[in-house]
Image 1: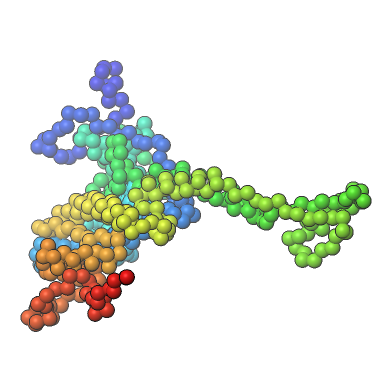
Image 2 (image 1 turned 180 degrees about the horizontal axis):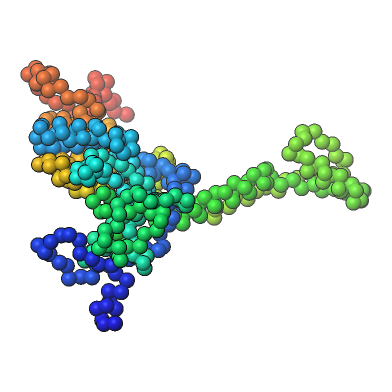
Length: 454
């Protein structure tokens, strides 16, 4: 074997139908499959049974969805077409609304780091007519005989496979593996093969070769598992011991107890969990052994929770619901950091959705305008705090009222009435002679000077 053959050993590289004008990279297309990933079933277990993980994923998802989104086109003509397309999704594939589809994609991205949507084509396999979400844990890239991702000469995957449960057959389902790929792709009998054009793959945070995304749960999986085990052990200890341990002293200097008397006292003490009334001779004394709380356990649990929140980017105060323990300034900093994180997630998702879904829909249906998905403002802080800052900016001349108005309408979920707004702008109330310098002007009592103390 020559040097080039040895270097390319295990790499599946074929040329997709791209044409010579596409250019050809000089690097080696590697498609290595990661082997140290946490199983998806274990991540689901973390989400289902750990309150911090459950709350972290749901809170971030709620903050994103609360901002709202619109699928927008440039002109009214094609806007109507896009509105109708997404109104009709779920007729061929899974029955969902566009809001549910976006929610499920984002949830899979946050939990697993990946989300997969099938683009469903018409009977002639020409036009995309519907969309269907595929369970993330069932999907993977098509692999070669070395269990590595099969890629073309440009480093792009040759396809995807859906793994069916044991006992199911993939006969007659999916796409047939193209003739030029058959020596490069290894497919089992319980796997459905998809050509790349049918799958939109969304990734959250990537690493290495960037074929797979990583979500918010996986980096903290070990800490989550240890925390749950520690909580179970401590709960079992408390349940087993119940209350303070009872110690019975049998006998005194005037009475030497026999084995039977000691056994009788022990039997009665053993029934403390069930009975309420007992009698003992005067030479029997009862006492309790206090339970010593272990600070090490509490400190370890706090450390493991901190690992979980660090992995997700969610402030501890919000993930655990203990916001009252943090001061206002600290919470504002946490909110700002969380907003930046969520905005980055939304930008990445919006970009991928436009390229892998909206663009393919437009191209296959001969639509000249590729729509975009636009989200509103993501707000992690209280509305009142942000509204107060914006109104202060208007009062100080930093912002104009019309600049703030679109946000206020969106944040308060108010339907815009342009006619009423124009009529109001023409009245004196919309142009007060002097704007107050604070949200709540001081009343007459607060204006009175305080009496000086003698």
